[in-house]
Image (tube, rainbow, N blue to C red; front, side, top):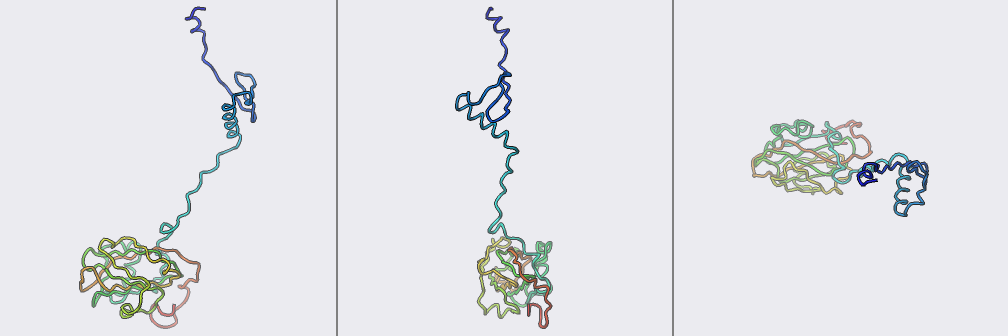
Length: 240
């Protein structure tokens, strides 16, 4: 044959393979054995055969469970509304506007102190919780809170108590921190059935203090539901 004829009659190489067990395959219709192949090719072919016979692939691993701040939830659903109160405010029934979904984000719905800078906000929970972090929203002026004291499980407090009692944590808020999520000293806020916030100074030494929202993050505990108990005597927050 001439070179041109040879080129015209040359057929492309066809490779067809069928794996019928761990070693045998069919090449050009003839049985072959992986063990007859060079070692690297045989090993690779064996891996292909193993993968083909092992069934569907294992599911992808799940992401790790959230922990730390990411594991904490909005404590809104844990709040016992009838046990909450605010003292020294122009509207003493306005605690809901500070805490409830849809209201705590309304910047124009503010709670303002009455006689001086001080405000005392007492938040009750249906059952014991762990409180991890807090965010306080306020007007962008000198009335925004600055000096804050937090108390755990102290019912029946008033502003005088807030001044004299030792707090579980004290926070000095900068203007930049208003609205930001701030982590608390978590070890001190375990087994909380009431959290009291006492604001005793504002950003601009104004005659009154104002804020528009409070958001709490934490985790619930499998404890008795405090809302199932009726208060026998006294004002809101006593005997719970």
